[in-house]
Amino acid sequence: MADRWMLLRDPPDHTRLRRLVNKAFTPKTVEGLVPRVAEIAHELLQPGLKDGGMDLIEAYAFPLPVIVIAEMLGVPAADRPKFRAWSNALAAALDMYWTEEVARRAADATGEIWEYMSRIILERRRNPGPDLLSALIHAHDQGDRLSEEELIAMAILLLVAGHETTVNLIGNGTLALLTHPDQMELLRRQPWRAAQAVEELLRYDPPVQMTARIVAEDVAFGDKLIRKGDLVTAVIGSANRDPEANADPDGLDITREEVRHMAFGGGIHYCVGAPLARREAQIALVALLKEAPALRLACESPLWRPAVLFRGLASLPVALG
Ligand code: HEM
Image 1 (cartoon, rainbow, N blue to C red):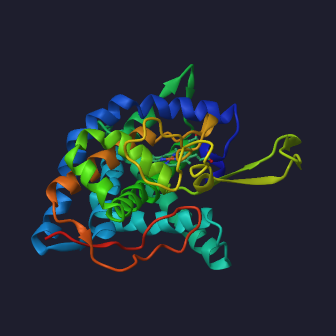
Image 2 (tube, rainbow, N blue to C red):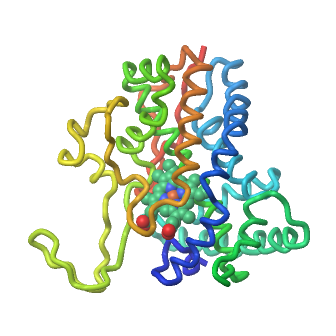
């Protein structure tokens, strides 16, 4: 399955797959989602506000992007627990702690999600709707279309990406603000800074910490020779703290004029979901600060998930009242 993901393809396959998904996943689609994202954020906050506290990951940062991507793709809400289990199993296989157990769980999840998505796509071919899956089914470009298998793999890639990344932007971002109360207050008073603040939070604690490439030809890098066929891991978290890219890189400053970061990667594989992730995080953070003026940490040190590639919190208990 992963072999069909554009994330892991070179041109010309990558170019073709990306052009087709771009046709369906446009900035206009994302802007059209804004009112619904705001509505979901508001609804998710209400139980926590009533109870005076919540686990911000479980109750807010996780469900928000998951509901959005599930509604976008047009997959049934009742199946969300299954997506979560499949998505976690696949994400674990992309990470660095590779054990037989991780591989086995990912293989099982692949079989199940593949079968599930094939069924939904078949159904959507018969009854197209205003959703992204229907758009992908009908996307064509210069005579190209997605093959059935590419279509299934693409839908799965979008679903997994929607589960494992934005949750951590909202979670890591909220934690960064909670531990820098002056910055949190500033954003609360000046919500028009949301776009700039999210760039700084993407830089400060990026949800995807690294990416890898297999080197296509020998290259000199500093005083090292990287040979054709070598595997290179680029650490995004480190690039984002490069003092040559941003002054005072270890400080959090949501008023930085030009934030330079690699959180969405770079080059031809630059994140397709970046406009969506940015808007979701901007809306989620502004809604949280506006609706919960008493927001504060309710634990000494929150727990991180045991992962290297996807950096995010297992839980973030907060008090709201
Ligand atoms: C804050 C949230 C997100 C972060 C930090 C993030 C990060 C990244 C990074 C670093 C890459 C490049 C990987 C590489 O070069 O090896 C990437 C690619 C990609 N992302 Fe995201 N992502 C986020 C959200 C999303 C969302 C919401 C979606 C879709 C629903 C998405 C879909 C994709 C896809 C399809 C690619 C592959 C693009 C290609 O190969 O051309 N991402 N993302």
